[in-house]
Amino acid sequence: MAAARRNVSVGLGLAGVLCAILGVCLLLVGPVIVKEQVVKNVRIDPNSISFSMWKDVPVPFYMSVHFFEVLNPKEVLQGAKPVLNERGPFVYREFRYKTNITFHDNDTVSFLEYRKLFFQPHLSNGSEEEYIIVPNILMMGAAVMVENLPTFVKLLLSGALAGLKQEAFMNLTVGEIMWGYEDPLIDAINAIVPGLIPFKGKFGLFMEFNNSDSGLFTVNTGMKNISRVHIVDSWNGLKKVNYWRSNECNMINGTAGEMWPPFMSPTSLEFYSPDACRSMTLVYERSGKFKGVPTYRFVAPKTLFANGTDYPPNEGFCPCMQSGILNVSTCRLNAPMFISHPHFYNADPALVNAVEGLHPSKDQHALFLDVHPMTGIPMNCSIKLQLNLYIKQVSGIIQTGKIKPVVLPLLWFAESGSIEGSVLKQFYTNLVLIPSVLNYLQYIFLGLSVPLIISAAVLMATSQDHKITESLRLEGTSGSNLVHPPCSSRVT
Image 1 (cartoon, rainbow, N blue to C red):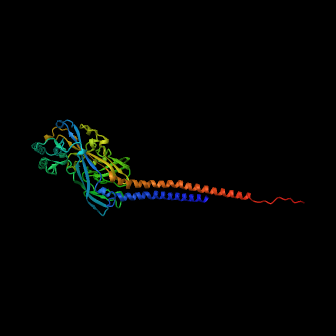
Image 2 (tube, one colour):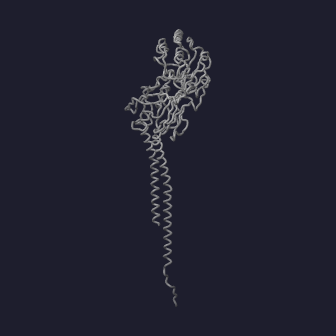
Image 3 (spheres, one colour):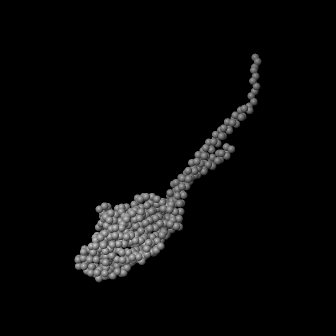
């Protein structure tokens, strides 16, 4: 019986020690294994799990476009406040894919990323054949652009506009606004002011957006230094752009906006946006989960589009107007174009009050990125921007009437997508579930080792006590069975 107890206690002790060893090994080695797997699978390497996701974005991506229709164009020409009505959304399925992928010896890779958009009638509130009254972007933009030219040039342009029957507002279909319409004004403007509009034929706001690339990006692969993976090395061969007035504003910082280096901290992230012609910084808002995957949410700070007065580091993006809008004329053919958050969210209230029909809301108009911090891969995102045109009365050009200066919203769009289906399952299994299992196992083994070792010690102590007790009992039994000699007295 004692021998059996000893055997059990030895077995429990060995099991406890083994669990402790396994727990300590997982505690020390587990994070290393997880880190190696993350590094192996997120770098830009044809053998990594994320490479195919990086090369051809496999998740459903949609662009939703909302137009602002001007309800009182005649009154605006007489100086009234524009009254706007939001139309849409008009939804497009967006496909992204990379071509010309070229790996270099300095741990970088170059590529061109193309976008193709396909209209989705079943997801849209309206068709591309619907008409919307919008500003005559070419005419109103050209008017502001020539404002400081000699009067005779402006009169000449005004005469050409009259001959072409151009007016301040146009009634166009959604398809024409998006993908272009024939306008003789383009050739007329170029004849009067050569080079003012460096294109011919059609004009559309998204003409160059569809089936076109966003420039030649060269980014780090992370093969030698994982903390640099996806960080932009150059864009179109440039280390910095020359659109802005300061070196800091011209810097190309962060990634190309698709993925970020792994093991992120809850601070901020940066990316270069060719559409905005600048680098942008988003800040950490909160931690959360997307379909079971831990995420950090990053949002735009209020200072993103602040003017130089309210936020001095943005002085290089000026000339500025109110806070909340970015003047992109220097990278948009000098046209008086501004970008902002939709409905002038987070902007100077004067911009909202200058028109009627805007209702800024964080839930509807704030952009966000939900990123898995361990891998730097976005799980869910919605990037929202608004395109605005600065219009006003320009002396010498009668078509501008008595329009009061106003930053007029044209449209806003949201590019949204999230990982789902088989891609999400593979991602969750390899980069969330397995690391979590390893993490839990280390504590399970360590937790088991304690009761096993204690049980072994208790059994060993009990066995020892039993042995001593049994030994004493046996000694007592032996003593009672001894034969003593009879007492005798000696007679003297």
